[in-house]
Image 1: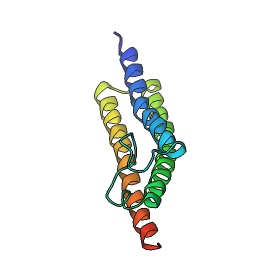
Image 2: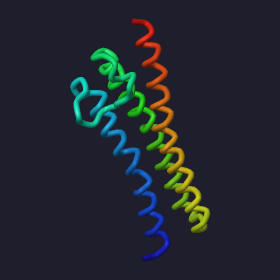
Image 3: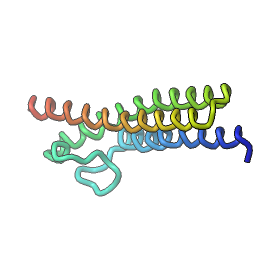
Length: 126
């Protein structure tokens, strides 16, 4: 396969994570699972304290994760397109892909920390 084809495949792969996370987060946000359900949901000790904290955690985590990953998707697409159009050297493009993967991972971690912080406030106000 030629070099540009490999770059395009890498670029498409960079978009899979934010798209997948957006779909899952959108489902958690718009169709939250029942209290303590075994399905895909935001689960933590604080979220499981009560049905109210569970509902709050699903809504908050789903919504913030969805919108965070909209931004990450746009950044990933832009970086991927720039790398392809500028025909970056292979090792530079590889480091760029690594940087995008780190950005995508940090997006999830920031949303988890944010949700836990908001849950503490939510539970404290009750």
